[in-house]
Image (cartoon, rainbow, N blue to C red; front, side, top):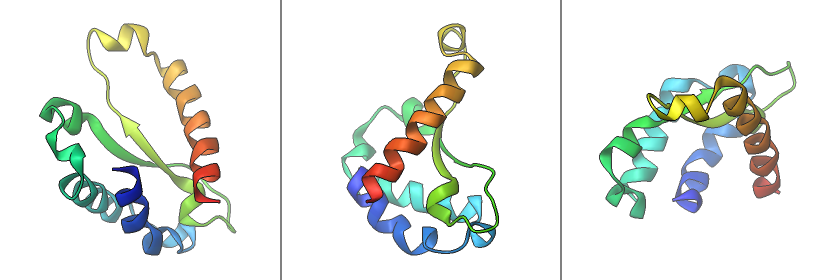
Length: 101
């Protein structure tokens, strides 16, 4: 899934961050799911997967502002608090940059 997602996102994320739009990335995410083994995951899990664009600075590219997001509800939100999700986003950003290199 990750390899397919990276392949599909490459052209979009090469753009400056100001020209990257969430709705386009959501379509790419859905395509990557359909074109990989991720399509066989539980539908509830797939429905919770989303795209988040982080706040960037003027010179950032799409790679710098892209993040995968996972929406949690009860009872998971008791364990996965907003603080925990924010930490996840920071770790994701670091791993995402390493993966791209």
